[in-house]
Each structure stands twice: as C-alpha cells, then as structure tokens.
Length: 400
Image 1: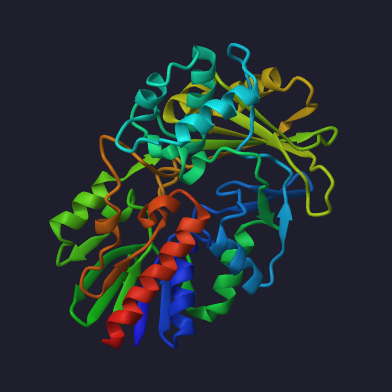
Image 2: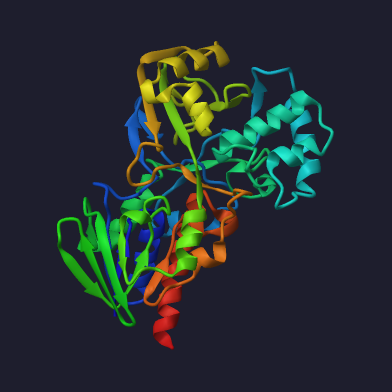
C-alpha cells in the first residue's frame, strides 16, 4: 500500500509517520522550502524565536508524547499564557478578570458570540473590555462573530498554568518527523491537481510531475485548498465545509533587549496585542521580548503591512521598563503567506466549523489539519491529532 500526503506541516507529517509505522510507503509534498508549516523556529538574539505556533500546555498530550518519542526536551517558559496583566484601558486587576471568566466558563453558551455573552453578564465595562481584548488577541478574531466556546477551548484558555516549548524550537518536532520519513518528503513542490477514484490517487505538482498511490491525505489549510483542482470534484458538502472555515489574522514582533527581563505577560487592551518575556532552556531569562497581535483590525491599526515602526512605539509605551533594541526588530505575519493566508481557524458563529464534514473521507482521500481538530483547533496539538486520525482512517478502511 502507498499513500501520498499533501502538506508537511504537523498534520501531514504526523499522518505520514503514522502510516509509515504501519508499513505503508509514503510520499509527502510540501510547497514551502522547509517542513513545519505554521510552526517556524528561527535563530534570534542568541536564542530561538517562534515565528509561528509557540505555546505547549500541560494537557497537550499528543505534543508531549511526540516530543518524548522523538527524543526532544520540553522547557518551561515561565510565561503565564493564561494570566496576563491588562494595561492601557481603565484599570482592572487580574483577579477581577479571572473571577469574571470563571463565572462565564461555567456556562460557555455555544452558538452565541463572545460579544453577546459578555454583554449578558452585567460586567463592568473595564472588566468586559479586558476579557474581550484577551479573547480577540488569542483567537485572532473579532468577538462580534467569535463563538463563546472560545472561553473553554483552543487558544482562549485562561488560568495560571505553565507553558512550555521544545528545546531548540518547536520546529524540531517537524524536522525530526521528517528525518524519520527518510527521502520521502519533497520540498518546494506545490500540488496543482489531485485525481482520484476508488483505489487510486494521482497527484500532479506545478512542474507537471505526477505520482500515483492507493490513498492520500490532504493536510493543508482550508484557505489554500482551493488552489488544487480535484478530479472528480469533491462533493458539494465537502466544499461547503471547507468554505465555511474562518481564519484569524495575527502577527508577531520580536525585539532584542539590552538587559534580559524575567517572565511576564502583559496585554494591551486598546491595541489588541500582548507581549511576553520568558525563560530559556537553562532557566535564565531570554534577551528578547515577543509581541503578538490578533484580529485584522489590530494588524491594520499597528500598520504591520508597512513594517514594525508603529508597533515598536506601542510596545515601548506598554512596557517602558524594557530596554528595547529597535534595530533588531523581526516582524512575522501570516496574512500575506500564500501557503496559509491566515494564522489558524476560528470558531465563527455566522459560519460555524463543520467538524464532522471537514473530517469526512472522500473515496481514497482523507483530510487533516488543525481546522479539522474540533476542540483542539488552532493548536499544534490539534494538528498532530488530526494527522494521526486521518492516517488511522485510511488504515482501518484498508483493513476491511
């Protein structure tokens, strides 16, 4: 049995690895010149910066297990991802925010927007705005359409839990998975067409080269799957589900520090970004600060399309205690990435994620990606889980 895998992000690599372990021959196609997809670790300020997905939480069982299996060490960041100090708006204490969130999470009314849910709790405006800002930033999506389930799933987690990263960068997970796949990963090879019938799949790349197999896993973001011609076309229900996926928009800014700063997490309520400092693998503070802005409106307000200048000013205003090295600024965006066109999927009320249909196989094709991961959407954990699930679907079908 042979399987083709389209996409060498976490989902595609997890699927390929799972299939290979079961004795299936695999061939992986990746449009980028690197593996990892929206996980991208780069050297910065004498350490490693995560230009893409960054935080690993204690309940991310698949990520933790994968790191252990691949011989990679997780390191504690010291950054309290779920407990940020709100600044910039009317004064509000962290304790007030956490108390209000605990009350809301007890209900977490699905089908209502975050904006509607917040308005229904009689919260003081300053508390309401701090919570709304936190969710919009983390989910990278407007509260006017974000499902209130964001309070209990995905990137919107609240709480004083620890956060972790892979020593040397989260991208090492992808690199190590790719190493175990041997020479079966073809980089800089975007796929243009997938022809399929019962028992056969043919993938054609943009250079006109084709490969055949018995089955395939399609593991790319819904926002870019439209660039692939399917023959025959996918069912209308599948296209409708893919078209319903809404993506949050986000950007990151990395700035070196003249003096390292201890772990911190600070939220700019009015400007919809947060910044954080963290520990390195040796337990000492790193010599840079990271800022993360979420929602298209925030990106426009910070003028990230024109560079980091306005954001640097806002960061200096938010954290005047940090000694920034402005000339070192590194800006990372996903809204202009032709292989993603967004940060990660969001739970829209107007256009809900149809997880069942997104996951549903079509003939010899199985589908993966964080957007198919249900409550784990938007996370590395979800991407890995989705890849394993897609591979198991193909294996179970073949065993019948």
